[in-house]
Length: 260
Image 1 (tube, rainbow, N blue to C red):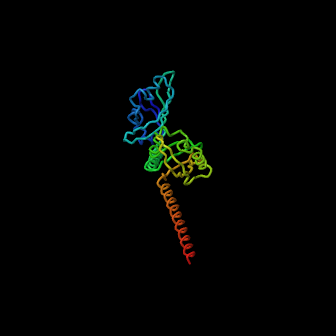
Image 2 (cartoon, one colour):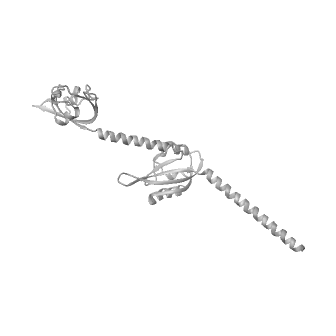
Image 3 (cartoon, rainbow, N blue to C red):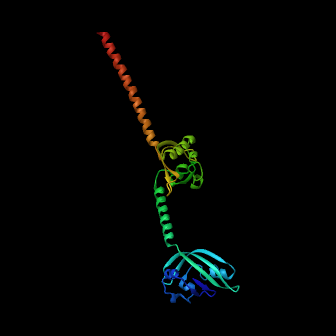
């Protein structure tokens, strides 16, 4: 639309008419801020006020309100109008970005949902790039390592295990094969606490199918390993006991045979 130096609308096109949902004769001659108001109206940052001071062009994102109260997110482009070297008004162009804003909100909502799923998980969860550098962590990782999110992000994934070389190999193996299952490591915390974990990792891709990183979950298997160790010790003791019994039986049978 074309607006004069006193904020009066002089000319509009069909797109603007549809956007504000008014008849052309209802628009022409009205103040621009009465037809399609925004947060910059009546302020020093109003595009028309800026053009009065010599600006030639301006662009900004805004939420405009129609006379019926409906709000529309738009990108506004303004250009200064001069006649005989004198400022006479501006030309304003509005691009409706409602769909884009809805898509952005849906993406944000999905990100919040995904973050919620990650944070409620009791296992340490980490994402890392092709070089094995940590890109994100959840609260469980922060608690397990005794380090803040800021301290963890940007550091090598492998540095947080007692065997960095094996941890790095596991991270790279994920990109080579697409996933790694039950890869055993020992996670180390800032205070020296060590936790035996089984890592499961898989790559994730962007919309074009390109691998952009890997997602790894570390399950604490300390109790399982302790149980396995106890089981092995029990089996060992049973075997030793069985051998002693067998030896004793053999000895007794030998003595009985000799007496006969």
